[in-house]
Image (cartoon, rainbow, N blue to C red; front, top):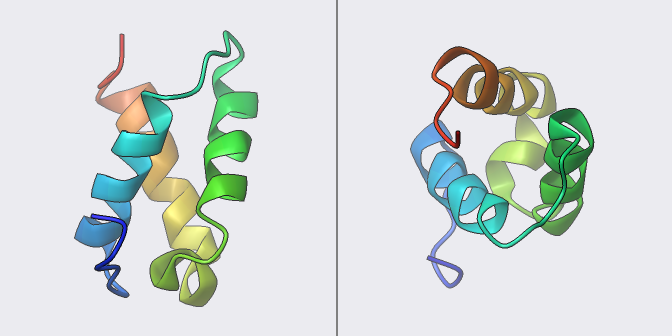
Length: 67
C-alpha cells in the first residue's frame, strides 16, 4: 500500500492499520500519535487531519478493532 496513497478515508484506514500493527505501545492515544507521525505525509491526513483523527479514534475505541 505504501506506493499508492490516495486522499480518502479508505486509503488512510489501510495505511493506519498497517502501521498500527508495527508499534508496541500500551497507551492507545500515544500509539495513535505515533502512527500519525509515521503517516505524516499521507494525503488524507494532510488534507483532513481532524477527520483522520476521528476515524482513527473510532476504529480503536468504538470498533475495538485491535483488541
